[in-house]
Image 1 (cartoon, one colour):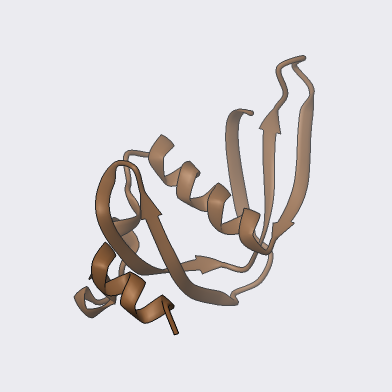
Image 2 (tube, rainbow, N blue to C red; image 1 turned 180 degrees about the vertical axis):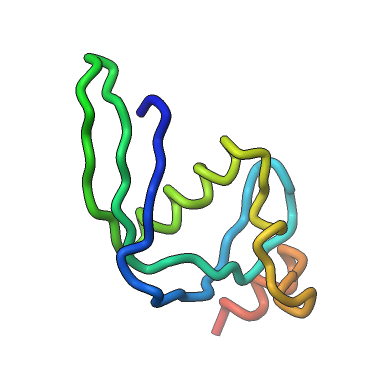
Length: 94
């Protein structure tokens, strides 16, 4: 994808867990749009677009932030949504 961009197709936002190799041993609940439309130029020079939802919509927004110099912690709304990996694993393990 060359020069990707996106627009939200809904105001609906969902907080869910994210982590990143850029910030090891930390997880956080990050709000992201649930439905977006992405646009980009393909390697062949064609203008492409598609709608994203589910897990891939979160991944796209996470990686898009990196292109703009942001990491997922920049999107966290409350410091109480940030957990060490150890604490996150305790929460996720029944």
